[in-house]
Image (spheres, rainbow, N blue to C red):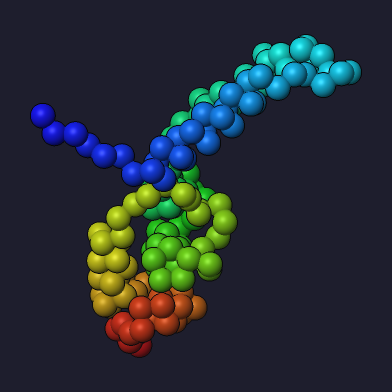
Amino acid sequence: MSMKIVPYSVILLAALLLTACQNLLLEPIPAGDSVEAATVTPTMLEVVKPAEASPTLSTPALLGQAVTQGEITENERLLYLAYAVYEPDSLPAQFRSNAGWRGTEFVREVRQAVNSTDILCAMDPATQDELRRLLQGGVLCD
C-alpha cells in the first residue's frame, strides 16, 4: 500500500480557508442591524433570474433580419458584413452582437461580390469604393 504525501503548503492553505470560513459563520450580527435586512425579497430574485428573451442573434443573422424587414438593402448587408469582418468599429451599433459566428462563408461571399462585375458594378460608387478599400482590391467598373 502506497502512501501519498501532501505538501505542507496545501495543508496550510486548507487550514487557513477553513478558519476564515468558520470566522465568517460565527461572526455576530452588529448591533442595530437586523436579521430582516439580510432577508431575500422576491424583487432580489427577479434581478438574478436569467433573462427569458430569445437568444441573441449573431451579426450576420441581424443583418439578414434587417434585409428581410426592409431596414437595409442587400448591398448594405454586404458592406456591413465587410465591416464586421475587417473593421468592426465601423459596423453600426444595432448590428453588433456578442453571439459567436464563423466568418469563413461571409468572407467568401463579400470577396465574391467585390470580384464580380455583375454584383459590384450594380452598387453605388461610394459602396464600391468602400468595399474595395476594406478588401484591398476588387473589379473596376466603367
